[in-house]
Length: 236
Image 1: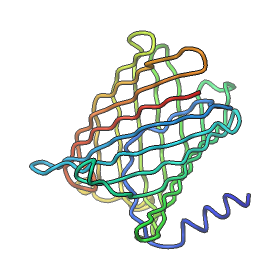
Image 2: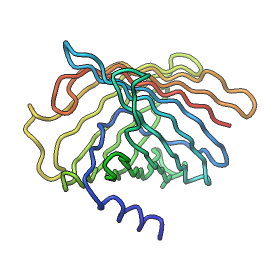
Image 3: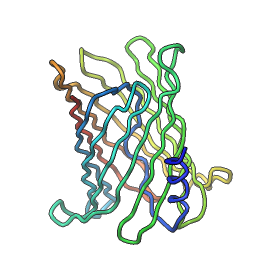
Image 4: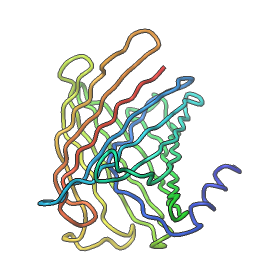
């Protein structure tokens, strides 16, 4: 209880800029396993150069229900010119473990911006189910940003079909609709979607290597901007 009390107080401390949702939060049991991951995503408005966000993370499965992760994110117009943008402490707690036809978890992410010493807090449910070869994900996150001093709603979804062992193809999407209780007009909301690929590149002995990638078309921060996302993860 003391940890979550501290997280909530820290999130309310000052203004912050939180980035849009760009990775689908998924459910899995990582108990006792250590993970390392490389994430990379871009936003490219029409006729402009892309902004890049390379990220490095470490994770640990505390038990069968709780996985915690520390993620460092850089931002820049080139990899060489990227500067540290934020520290992220991410936690997923499984609420179901096979007793339902779906899986449900609680997602919590604390964002720390070292440049201006500000914070944001993201909380919400994570839902997942399998229908034969089809895997479906749907998430809703409430994000408090102390710079705006309001709470906004972010949505995620994905549907992928297993086309071969270890390979899934499908589509995913993200939305930011404004304040959770007072949505923006549709023209000012951000929605983007596109094709997605999930692959297990290695699964031998104690090691598992997975790759998730997608290319999304639509709007980000209320402006047209295509996005590329990639997440490469190693677990042992």
